[in-house]
Length: 124
Image 1 (cartoon, rainbow, N blue to C red):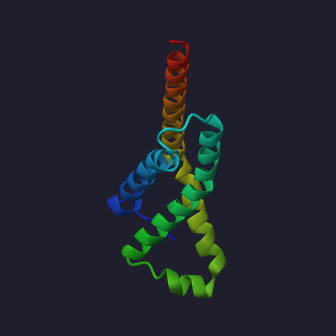
Image 2 (cartoon, rainbow, N blue to C red):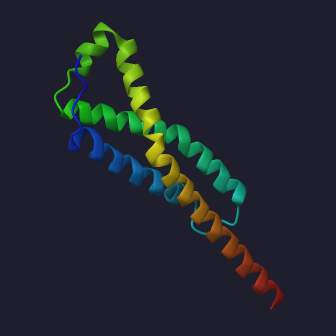
Image 3 (cartoon, rainbow, N blue to C red):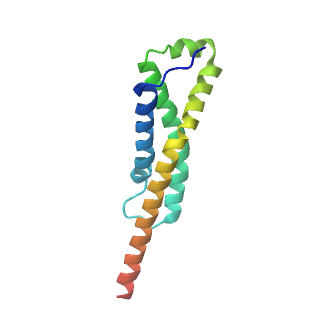
């Protein structure tokens, strides 16, 4: 079986969508005024399985858009189809993992800045 050629639809588009989601998802789930690093850590941890499921859904949708008969393949042998989607989702961690980490670190800096402002207000 020949490897699938690299195209916009199977490489750049899913990685762009998934990378953007990895950066945006923590910002959507952490309340703007929170001062809790524990809440941020919980959200960052919860984002990991959400991103894996989202990445698998993106790859599934783009493969269907590309004309793949996934329903027929799934009916014939569900294991290889699920395995390929799981592999693609896991490999996409190389893109969304750093984006999610940078977003979480940025949110941690915002939380620490807000805490510092609160302390300055109490002392001043």
